Length: 317
Image 1 (cartoon, rainbow, N blue to C red):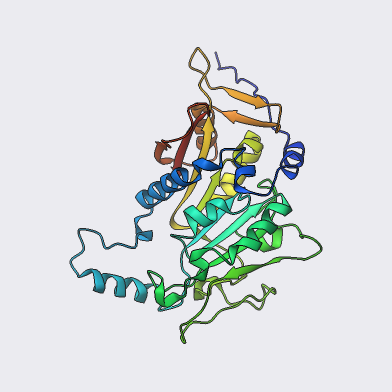
Image 2 (image 1 turned 90 degrees about the vertical axis):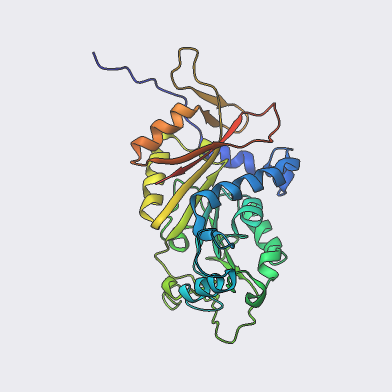
């Protein structure tokens, strides 16, 4: 006898975006009044990412047989020299840039932000030039790399991770929002903020701010946004994300999870306020499996308010 599949409630993405359009464009706004948890949550994310992507670490491993100075010099040489931007992350449901600013741009050279609410994205663009990592020139950065943040207005249902500029929506009549690129104090470094992707240098050249496509990522990071995707849409997005990963790259998920049903089967809870769903652990992991992904690591984020659903992080390949 075949198992009967339970039909879960599905999110309403259009009404969900409308809900968020009415929310203040601030950290406290996008976190639903829980802005005070941002620091501990961001540190948890960075710690988790460095455990699964150790090549992002700024410290020589204990097993290194060369000095810390030589190790760092070798890393810069392997990246193509000073001023290059080699590592890249996609921040999904990026809001006003909180995750990019505090969790991703400190350890990645370039971050592509994807967010469906235009006012959130414009606020992130406005603030990004003041972020410490963007204000730090290559000579003072750990790997002497330049940093860049890119801005794409789109739902996850519509974005093609490998072609974010081509598949994003215009914002306030502009085809694209120009990337924010860090200061340049290296004579050997070159940069571009060219809005024509056909004339922009290839991403393999390591030019910060390049809008060349296709784009590949060390990390696709989705946090507190997948509740707005149905299982079908989530599976499709995860498969597109997997295709856009570099060799050794991962998909990172950070979401609230509800408890399973009393009989141990998966559960999905519908939120009438923002028209999203909260999945249980089994519901998420079934979707991951159906998308052809394997779980590399799973952790609980500690230090969150007791009244919230448990927050879990997964690394997938």
